[in-house]
Amino acid sequence: ETKESRKADYILEVDGDSMEPKFSDGDLVLVRQQPAVDEGQIGIFDVNGKGYIKKFSGDRLISLNPKYDDIYIVDQDFRCFGLVLGIAEVE
Image (cartoon, rainbow, N blue to C red):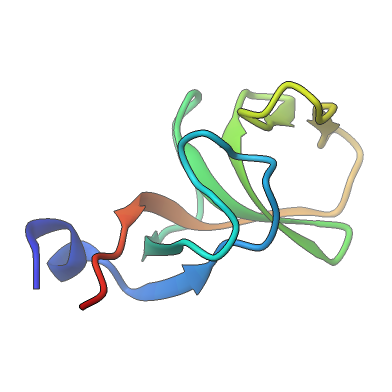
């Protein structure tokens, strides 16, 4: 139990490398459920029925790994599920 884990509502497993080097495939991330995040924060999102962990930038979602394109969310079916607080420490 950590300060971050006490604030989290759930844990999700990262699938893929789009958020490297901060989050890697298989990492378990702590998420606080909330309907929006501030610009520049990393959140959990749904765009047209597909889930993402991305950095929010107003009109788009950004991957930290430069080999991935931005996902534009204007005129898309878009929803925020929560704010990523960090990586869960599993023992």
